[in-house]
Length: 187
Image (cartoon, rainbow, N blue to C red; front, side, top):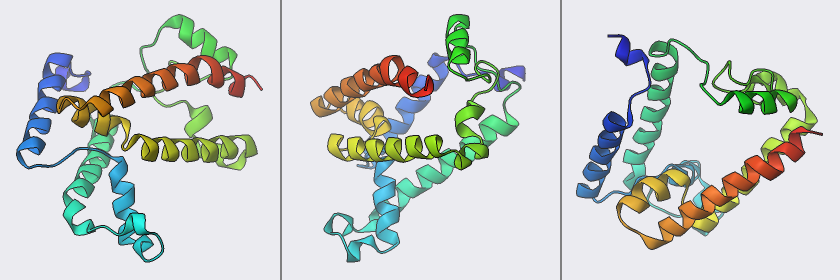
């Protein structure tokens, strides 16, 4: 039973993801998380002000259940099925992160220097979160979907635009982590 508290290997998780994608394909549905924000905004009445939000949100109820399942599953996985919150990362990466001020590197799954509630009192952290949120929102809209939608659903459907988007996501992620991230957190 100890296997349940360990990360699942690729040969278990991969086929499960494929099974979900096959099920969505048979139901003529596309997987993606960013479309849920549009659905939630529509439910809250944004369609009265902006045409982009004039959609039939009831047709997207199934995807809101995916979000709910993700939240519940994440909670169960982290709180009930995890023995250790430490992340196994390269020791050199831990040294580099600690040099940037991330003392929790390697000892917790989420760095407390970014995800603790105390960061909400720090102006620099608020600016970084706001700017990051705007850039993610712009990028998601510009790319026509999020990383999960393109990388899982789009690539499994062999969509050329999704391949281009995923390559762009990786290039942007590498640039962020290797160039911008050290600049921001060395200040």
